[in-house]
Image (tube, rainbow, N blue to C red):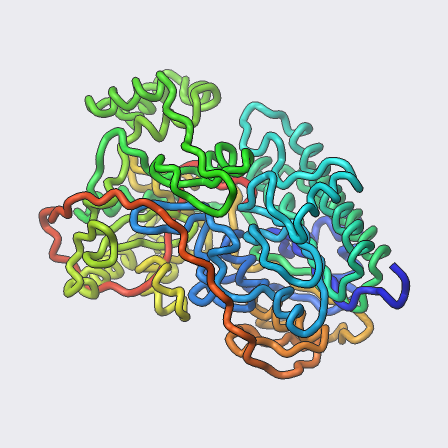
Amino acid sequence: MSDDDSMTTLLVGLDAACAPVLDPLFENERLPHLRSIVEGGASGPLESQIPPWTASAWPSLFTGTNPGKHGVFGFLAFEGYDWDVVNATDVREHALWELLDTQGKSSVVVNVPVTHPPRPFSGALLPGYTAPEEPACHPEGLLDDVREAIGDYRIYPPHEGAADVDTDTKIAEYRDLVGMRGAAFRYLIERFAPDFGFVQFQATDTVFHECEGDRRAVRAVYEAVDEEVGEVLDSCDPDTVIVASDHGIGEYGGYGFRANTFLDEQGYLTTQSGGEGMPTWVTARDTRLKTGETATATGTGTGTGTETDAEPAGPTPVERAIVLAARAGLTTQRITKVLETFGLLDVALRYLPQGIGRAGTEQVDFPASWAYVRDAIELGVRLNVAGREPAGVVPEAEYETVREDLIDRLSGLETPDGDPLFETVGPREDFFHGLESHRAVDIVTVPAGFEHSLSTHLGSPAFDEPSEPYDHKRNGIVAARGGAVDSDADLDGAHLFDVAPTVLATLGVPAGERMDGRVLPIAESVGETAYPDLIRRGARKRSSRRRPSTTPSDRGRTNYRLATAWQPETTYHGC
């Protein structure tokens, strides 16, 4: 790029980056380019939101709004008892590059999660996480152009989630992905000469989930990212560079909590043998997103968002046998106990198809239950309300009573060590506000110190090991450097919602009046303005399998408000 075409602002997104990860690498002089931004400018912790997970947090960062406004609370969107993997049509607020477009400024965006399918704007966009492996890009045909210019380009590691792949292979794949991000971004900024550039690196999170904090693997990934950041800085020479993460990451030293088991014990949840249950992120990604199809609930093939709505593959003969065994009472929970006794559980988990566990396990009967957790990363409990859900059983008049009772029961929970399980349990309106708040869980549960993990898995006892040894923490990082940046600026109290209005301010553009963040003191605010409402696309069409409502015994419960929840026992790699 020529001097006249130099970029005004560069935003580098590092998924899960935080001081406990970066500081040791800085001390060992492993990351000269990132270190020069963090230590040569203004920097500090960046508080994430609730829930602090990729699919919800990145839309919060690039819209400057809370999930109650932008509408994404986890990796899944729910319609009745059906689900679909979230995409950009679920984001109900403008992204900052769309706002810049209204002000005559162009952008290049690479690998940012939940940006597929892209809406038109001045510039270019290659989608990131939750997009299919062959995504629609902006402008049309861009992916082919990128591959012709740089070679291979993909969104997901070839062997993400594979238990039988060695660490060296995984490291090589992560480094390849990091190189693709940098090469594609440099090609696009040369081609489009944008005012604003945004490149995101997901492997900085994935390596912790896949390699469980292996220091050698973490170092290798961050060194690759630092090298790409250095080359990008040389290529675009931005006036201002901002580094930001969506959340932090660290060891979980507490417990895993099977919330649906607890709800079952309290009489709020009904189970069934051989049901479909909830998907894992790995299953949704591998069976749908990597093939360019939509991840869709309940085997109906009714999801939308891509050109193909193919029916999911049917169960294997082994899976069908497991289902029959489950209906006879032989669930995989019982099988697991036998395998553990003989030391064969690890072998079984490594070689049996992923679908077998879900097919044979006792599952939540969602239409028949009063309360359940559907997506554990939403961090909350949903109620099955009459008149709201297709076969709701909680009478509308008893909603607050039921919700208050569950809040009381959950608030008093202690770990086996006698410590509080949650630091906060409350109605969703305490956490979310906006027109999309009704999509949230009804009760929000915030784990104490983010040392404990939630699970949708049914099993006994309710407390077990955390689902992953490393998982998400509340504090990420933000740093800025540039000619107009005060390196002594106090970034104390910086929040995820502050990134979008700050980026706009560095480009001389006012923040949106609906934004929840403030301009950080690294830039001079140019006020707020009312941007046009997002023209919303039609709602996704999902089927709802209605079942007659049932009234379980002993259901005289108490009060309810608003919030979010999902995650099976299996982990969400790279999220």
